Amino acid sequence: MRYGYFDDAAREYVITQPNTPLPWINYLGSEAYFGIISNTAGGYSFYRDARLRRLTRYRYNNVPADTGGRYLYLRDNASGAYWSPSWQPVRAALENYTCRHGLGYTRIGSTYQGIEASTCYFVPLGENLEIWQTTITNQRSTAADLSLFSLVEFCLWDAYDDFTNYQRNLNIGQVEVEDGVIYHKTEYRERRNHYAYFASSEPLAGFDTQREDFLGAYRGWHEPLAVAAGESRNSIAYGWSPIGSHHVKLALAPGETRQVIFVLGYHENPDEQKFDPPDSQTINKRTALPVMRKYLDPAAADAAFAELRAYWTALLSGFQVETPDEHTNRMVNIW
Image 1 (tube, rainbow, N blue to C red):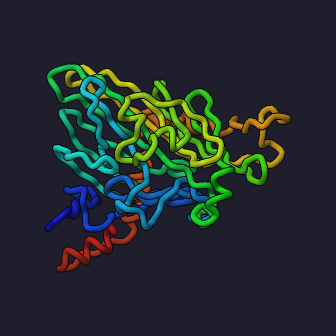
Image 2: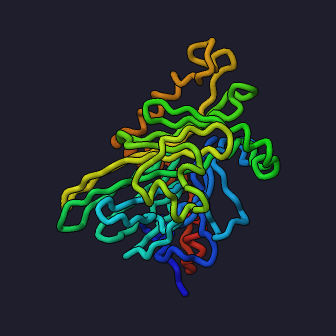
């Protein structure tokens, strides 16, 4: 069975079915911040070192395969139906689905019950963050009352320790939530000078940072209680398993399109400037806020994506070959 094809003109590999034999992955980033993303938005993010500075949790031996990643959920608030535009983790029967793995970016799009959604994931040049640029269109003849939920599960930084030191890890997770931005700050007070942040461009109807509150008892990523109920718990994680989830409500007229941007990033502070105010336990966000706010603006996100595309065009234009074999041409000139 064929699951996709090369689009040489666009310099992309196009996947047309989500249930590939194995996760088909792409790489994001080119400098210090990196990510691995599959065709169903699975994978993880890290800063420089995939073990020691892991931002998001990923279990390689999970069942179902490729569970955990950069997830979005859409919910029809009128009917209660919900789905994932990337197919995983809900795995609803999408009406159409396309994943385009490009050079430094991945775009996943689908349609379900007349709602079209497309998300472009990429890392801007020179920045320690990733952008999820999501576009949602109501293709119905009637208005749509929707809820959009974002989701990442935070790794407690050292990926090996995160897998092995289970009892300790259930006691150390910490977050802050301020003005709708979720900050993961495990061990920041004790011995670290870095934290992760997860922000939304839209006002929030709610949020969650505690995995068990988001999922509910005996439920998985495919059926989280917050999504099924259409209501976040506004949970604050202290210990257990910290996550980041935003709840955004969207009211779309027939044919209307809205864009929502999520920014997931990494930030460091000098040791003498870790807290604000200095005698508190509140992390210093002063230098992180301008960066995240910049890329929550659609114009800035568009410009960053155009710059990324131009970077790869310039890089690849330095050497090109023309041979009788199209596969050789593709491998050398693009991939």
